[in-house]
Image (cartoon, rainbow, N blue to C red; front, side):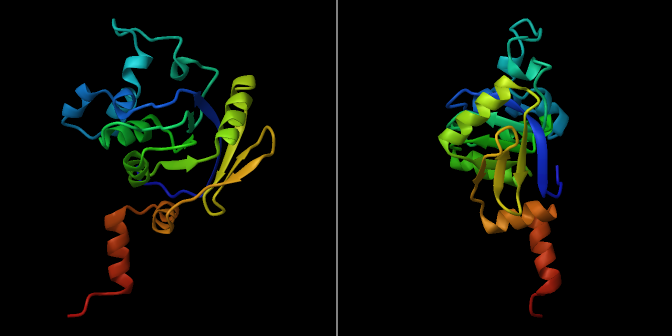
Length: 194
């Protein structure tokens, strides 16, 4: 969903598992879908973890725990590894996450998130561990992600870290532009010679 991105302050959903791959984010059987509706993919985010084999809710999975909510997912190291399926980013965006924080992202998945208006924020392992501690101690802990300043702040401790982002993608996120929108905007200000 195209949305301008500036500063987000939200509670978080903690998922302290490492090496979460794209098949766990959205199982392969959903890649045959003939729709790209965000709601469809969002409903199936982490499908095999959220639901039991009989289709009932797995009440032990964090997305089904009413104590945790918000538009920020805090995930363990090496998030989005595995295949390059863009559907994984569609599912994250479709669920309503605007930010994913981890200490490491698979490169292709990181770019897919950016292309789908989800901000992947890379933090140190120490900062990530502190976030998990704060959120599990108090599910109402808020995190502030400031894209213009490129900072993420644990509001429970006041600790802040700087994160890196490609300048072009930062501009696109802050202005709600995908690659085609950016090209069209550029052509308005710098038309091609006739």
